[in-house]
Image (cartoon, rainbow, N blue to C red; front, top):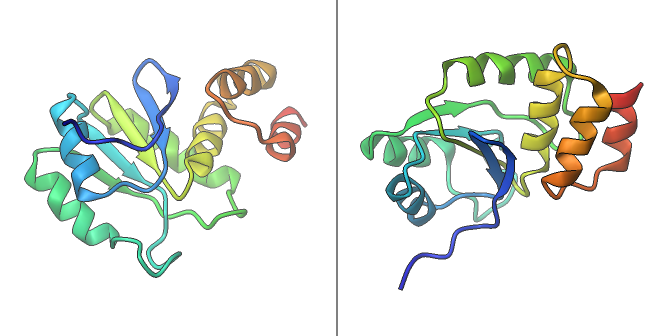
Length: 142
C-alpha cells in the first residue's frame, strides 16, 4: 500500500505546496521524483512537529535539495517573497514547499512573482490552486 501524502496544491508546473511533511512523506516525494523541499515553517509551532534539522538531514540523505525559510504565520512580509524568489532561482525542480497548512507557501510564491506578473493573474492562479485567502488577495491587489 502506498503512503498517503498530505494534499498537494499545484501552484505552477514545477512548484507544489502542502502541509507539514514527515520523513515518510519525504521518502514518498523522493520516490515520485521531487528534487527540492522548501520548509517555510518555524520550528516549535506545535509540540509534535518534527524539527527542520531532522527533516533536512533525512531529505539530504535521500539526495534532495533542502531550503529552510521559516516564516511566522500571519506575518508574511514582502521581503520574504523576495527571499523565496531567490530560493526558487536556485532550486532543482520539481519543488515542494511546506508549512503548517501550505498557505504561507502560496503567499510567498505570489509575493515572489509580484514584480513580474499582474496581481490579478497571481490571485487567479492561487485560486485555481485551491487557495481561499481574501485578505491576502486584497493585499496583493493593492
